[in-house]
Image 1 (cartoon, rainbow, N blue to C red):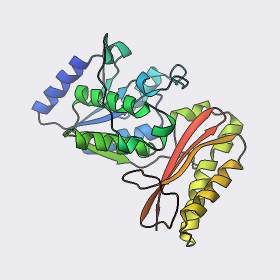
Image 2 (cartoon, rainbow, N blue to C red):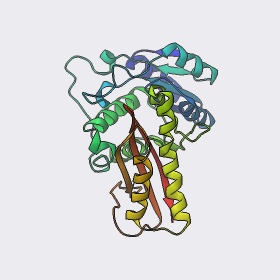
Image 3 (cartoon, one colour):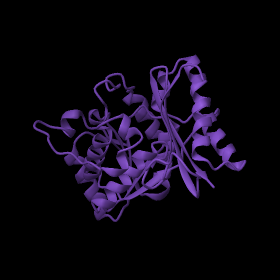
Length: 283
């Protein structure tokens, strides 16, 4: 396994593999890896000849009051985990390499980012799409793998790839959960023991919504109300959003009866830690 620090070297390596007829799989991360990331790596290994994992904590996607400075970092630990998985390359640029002096170019997807995290974290997805487009240019992947836990991020990347005619297959990989149902996230390390228990309300809320659907409930208002009540009545929690959405456009569904597939999207502060989760509800 090799660690690549510069864009030019990464591009040179990618071009060499493409000349050999090899397919490149790419897993972009911000490091502090967990089983969810490793699941993406394993999916990439199944499909592709060569796997590249990037580790770069992207400052553009953090707001002024968010946790960029304290975001967990442990490159040695991450490297050991990726070597064990048989990853060929870690792309590990620094901030200067990614955003040099005078940097002024950004990529922005508009409509699919206007709700959910896009509404509560202005500028976040502009940072995501900018860094991912730059990473795609550096790694030149045939396939890129993203977790479905960040549903809006996955939808945004798919829209960007389609709109900009990028020759990349974007693969969504199902959410990986802890044994008790909590969606895996690097931010789970911020939780105290009591907060960790309260955080399970997100998974309980998803299961409640599914149970309501299975029992014949179709009212968007009723399902939203029940989910909000469950989370609000859990200690140490503060709701950022609880929304039902069209799974394609991410437009909100606030009234009426649910039909077909509907996305339930949650963002909840547990203590000071913001957690997200989601599920597709099927009628």
